[in-house]
Structures are given as C-alpha cells and as structure tokens.
Image (cartoon, rainbow, N blue to C red; front, side):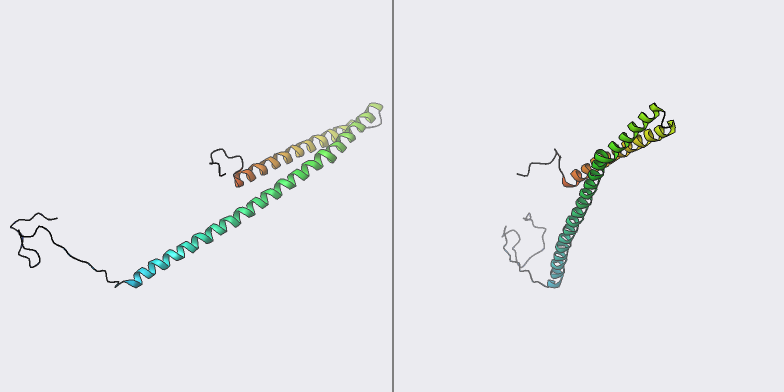
Length: 154
C-alpha cells in the first residue's frame, strides 16, 4: 500500500489518485533449476553423511562397551584367583613358617619374607578390586546406567 499523492510520476497501469488498489500476477520461471538440483544433492549427501556418522558412533560405542566388559570380567577373574587361591596359600605358608619359627626350625627372615608376600598379594587383590570397580563405572557411563538426570524412556 502506497500513499497516493500528486507527486508520483504518471503511470499507465495505475491512474494516480483514481485507483487506490491495483492487482497483479507473478509467475516464477525456473531459470536456475540446476542450482536447486545442487542444493537438493547437497542435502541428500549431508543426510547420508549423518547416517554414516551415526552408524560409526554406534559401532565405536559397541566396541568400547565390549572392551570395558572384557576388562571387568578379567578383573573379576583375577580377584577370585587372589581371594580363593593365592591369598589363602600365602597365609597358610606364613602360619606354617611362624609355627616353625616358634619351634626353632625356621629363621626370622623366612617369616618376614612370608609377611611381605602376604601384604603384596593383599595389595594386588585390592588393586584388582579397584580395577573391576573402575571398569564397572566406565561401563555404566557408556551405557547410561544409573543416570538420574535422564527422562524415563518407558
């Protein structure tokens, strides 16, 4: 809408001051169809690229979860080995050598070595338990398990 006044140049379409409205039509001629084809192709490539990236991320996540799960299982097996076999044997050896020391059949150095062995195995057992918990925490982080800030997806 343009204000109609007498300062406008004469027009063959609109009579100045006589017609307050004019009507026109417009037709779009696709002169740049190849430009639009290029835009469409670019969008299709971006779409495929996004899907490829999503697939790669899923594959990477699956590999990380598998690696952490294997680390967890390995740490748990090692912890069971310490708990069920190595530590009881080391403590039993210490008890036997302490009894022999009390009877005068063993030297104090043997008992001290046995104590060091037991302490080193207990430390290794504790480290293995810590490794298992760290693997469990990394696995929970990768899977989103235990998150309270996520909406319920049920």
